[in-house]
Image (cartoon, rainbow, N blue to C red; front, side):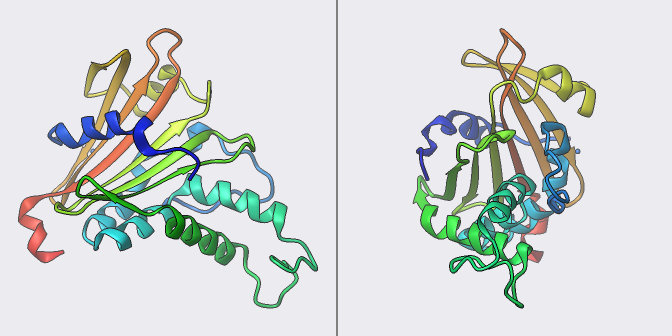
Length: 225
């Protein structure tokens, strides 16, 4: 964990404080296919965030990060670079070797090293390394007291624009100003949960800086989870 979660705290607090209302990550692409910001869809996170919201805090974080498409793709790139025939630490020639299993093993290591408990929440805040990637940081957060779960991703510079967000998801159901940033809000609601995605955007150049995704289990469902 190279940087603390302070840079993410304001947006997470915005999502936690705002009431939610009316809305499996997938496998890494084959070979060296490029992963773009548009390949990520916040709505795909809903199933595993919902599962995480019903689990104990640490197990919930593991569910979020093991199923996060961006994190799996990034770690898969590291695995492809590291795991070579005859490598004592990561020998891709072993009979029991599996890239998918190695990715999961490394993500579990990220969780063990980065797990923190603070402000009645458990979280893992992980900065992606220097290798070019569409995201620069990821935060998974699970409330200690409530059945809700959060995934926050910081975009790399100029990786995504407000125009691309609207082209993919349509017009937001609400917009706001948060500090010096513009905010686009999207939502999904059904009988079991309410989900929200909040995109934080630089109003000067329209670059997307962060997206905070949350799931809150509806009250009447909590006893059956």
